[in-house]
Structures are given as C-alpha cells and as structure tokens.
Amino acid sequence: MAEAALKNEQRGEATSARIARHAQVLSSQLRSLGTSLFPPSASKGLRSFSSGEVARIVGVSDGYLRQLSLDGLGPKPALATGGRRSYTLSQVNELREYLAEARPKEALQFKPTRRSGDKLQVIAVANFKGGSAKTTTALYLTQYLALQGFRVLAIDLDPQASLSAMFGYQPEFDIAENETLYGAIRYDELRRPMREVIRQTYFDGVGLVPGNLELMEFEHHTPRAMIDRRERGHDLFFRRVATAIEQVADDYDVVVIDCPPQLGYLTLGALNAATAMLVTVHPQMVDVASMNQFLLMTSELISVVEEAGGRLDHDFIRYVITRHDPNDVPEAQIVALLRGLFGEDVLRATAWKSTAIANAGLTKQSLYELDRGSVGRAAYDRALESVDAVNAEITSLIKGAWGR
Image 1: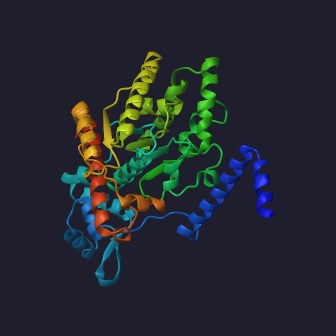
Image 2 (image 1 turned 45 degrees about the vertical axis):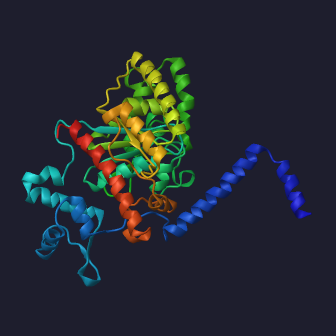
Image 3 (image 1 turned 90 degrees about the horizontal axis):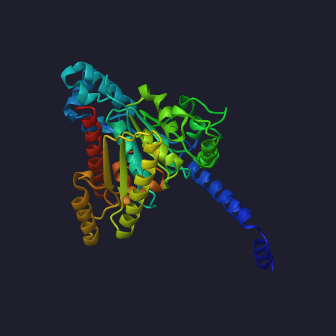
C-alpha cells in the first residue's frame, strides 16, 4: 500500500519538481562523497613527489638532487624511512628558481616562463561531441604545464563545470553567484574585475576561474545586448572573454580554456581570445562525423565574427586524438585517415584509452595527483607516458610561438 501511494504521488509530481528533487538528492550525495574522500575539510591537496619524479620533471639526475640536499642547497626535502626524499610542488618550483640562478646558461630550461616580448598563450580546448575527453585534455594540460614551471590559469567555461569538479569544487555548493567568468563579462553594473573571480588552487602555479550553471546567463543576455546595440569595441560580446583575460595577462604564461560543448556566445568569445585551439577527437566514425559538423559550424560563425571586426589569428590549431586504443584496427584506420587529411595539424602523440585515467577520475584526481602504485604500476606508467607525450608536444608548440 505504501509503495502504491508513493507511485501515485510521483505520478502527480510535476516533471520540473521531480528533476529538481533528483538533483538535490544527488548533490547531497556527491557532497558526502567529497567529504569522505578528502577529510576533514573536504578540500583537495596535492601529494609530494619523490626525488626520482622531481629529477625527471626538472631535468636533472637524482644523484645531483641528492648532493644538493646533502650540501644544504635549494629547498630542503622531507626525509622518510630509508632516506627517501620527497618534495612538494611548491618546493619543486623553489628548486627551479635556485637552479635558474645557479646555472644561468640553462635558466630557460629550468624556468621556462614568459620573457619580455612573449605574448600570453591562450589555448581553447573545444568540441561539442560528448565523450571526446575535452575536459580531461584541459585538466592534464593545465597540470603538466604547471609541473614544467609555467604559471597557468585554467578557465572553466562549461556550465557543467567538470573541470571545476576535478579541482575539488562542487559547483552548486562551492561556487556562489557572480564567482564564475560570467561575473567578469556580464553586461550590467554587477560586472567584476577578473582578478576577483580567480581562485588559487592546491596545485602550485595554477589559478582557476570556476564554472557553474550561471555561465548560461551570458548566452541568454547577449542577444538582448546585441539588439540594444549598447556595446562597442572591447565590450562587444565576442571580445569580452579576451578583455577579461587581458586584465591578468601579466600574472600568467598560459591560459587553458575548457570550452562549453556547444557553439554559443561563450565559445565564440573563447575562440576570439585564444592564440591557439585544440580540437579533441575520439577516433570513432560517429565522433569524426560530429567533428566535421563542428568544424563547418565553427567556420561559419567565425566568419560572422570576423565580419563584425573580430580577428582570429591562432598560432596553431591541432587535433588531439583522445581515448585511443592503439590495438584497435578500425581506430588505427581513422587515425591514419585524419593524418592523411590534416597532416601535421594532428598531434603525433595520442592520448591512450586507459583504466588508470578512468580510475583516477573516480576520485576526481589526475595521474599527476596519484601515487604510482594506487592504480597499478604498469597501467599508470603506460597512461602517463601517453599523456606526457601529448602535453610535451603542445608545450613545444607554445615555446615555438615564443620563438624558442
């Protein structure tokens, strides 16, 4: 009887009310899971890195790091049982500073940040096909660049806010009104300086502009602003993202934008602000067909923006093969097709499909945040080698844009 009454009650419940109830229940459960994963404050932190990892990241030998430690030079690592040394990411960056001063001829290797005349690199990661690993690509690129010593700003432009979630924020609880990029690009008197919506993260060297559903307000309000014709110059809708980024340009070397999964006003603003674009591609025929539609629509919309005075002059555009199974023959054929069509515009490295990456994502972490043994050493090593190769290639393109 009670079950029948519940079913009758649910039948009489409005669809909007039911969906809202489901969202509230799920949000509460996700919050509880977050608290259990990251006690006691439910906030994320970053592990320390072994001396071997640090040696690989910085580009010196483990023996050299050991000697520095014995001589009391550079940051002092933590010592564990057996004399094992470990460094926090903040200490890794201190080490970079020390090495750049101690070995000035190699300073650019140890501290690769922008020099005078180097323009800020703004990389838009885009696609409107779900499952193309767009957010994963943005996350791993952001963290890889930070590990290499770059100052990085990650901007979550996706209202679903998956990138924000990977940095430890639950959007509906942790991101209040006017705390997304919308706060810095909105059309009314509540518009805020860009610096006020940037949050420092547990990942040293990474700032984050989080996202949530509030970003949709820009999609809703832009048509009215265009009809009213109140906006001119830098206030035109497609220039607003660039104008906001310019306010903090001196604070960063690279900006990584996780674009929304549709070609709306936010995406056009991101593409107008970008100096480079990455298009993620899952090598399945339905995904490639979807990408074709994405490219056609992007071309048409960019033409409209250019006619309105926008200028999209990207240093590079690359297709990133993601979730790739190198042993799958049909996938190999599609990758070969893309390389035949687009040549060097397809990255040579591909991001492999990996249970290690998927398992890390279950706890809202990347491989860079996990200990090597927590997801299986062999799977971890294969997956990390794959994403490192992709990100190293992108980093080379960034340096190439700076003439290095």
